[in-house]
Image (tube, rainbow, N blue to C red; front, side, top):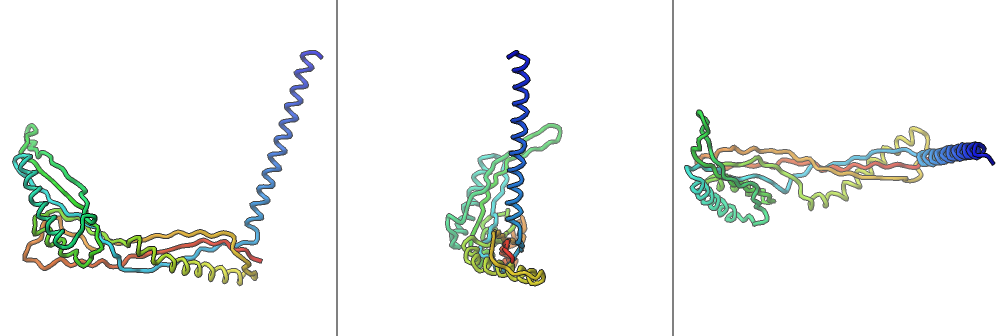
Length: 247
């Protein structure tokens, strides 16, 4: 067989194999489409939602001390003394070590930029983040910290602990599933069909909290009344998506 005939034969073999591959791909696609259409045939999907407003059980706030001194060592020493006094007050209020976490510590020079940079002194800062469930002591935490020397009080945020969310989870799941079932039943009745089962379902949950109090950056006047903190409410919600078989 000549080389030219061999090349022609190889060419036709390649063409034939290409046609077979195209036909196989088309068949696989048709089958997958058929399965997909079968999966969604005679089904309806519905979302269900439930929420509950509750009083948050956890508060987070930042307390710190910022001082200035002519020397770095002086600023550090003064800051350490004041922060130690603040910590003593926090511990006296019953806060545990696990509720107090250092969030920021720094010592940096202060400059006068009149002409050329000249160091005029040093600032030392130390901040701790408080996370506690002792909401009834928040006012005292702020007042006694500022009285001890704290002059950087951050905004307070309230949240719902994971423990409390777990307690609500089963109740919210049941309520959101009932909501989806009720709406699916009304839709099925309108369409003149009956729900015969559940194909798939999924859930998602979330918690939204608001900040109800913003503390001043400067220390409070000792003559002022005790700070009042109100946690307000947070919303814990649950949503489900259910796909029902209908007949």
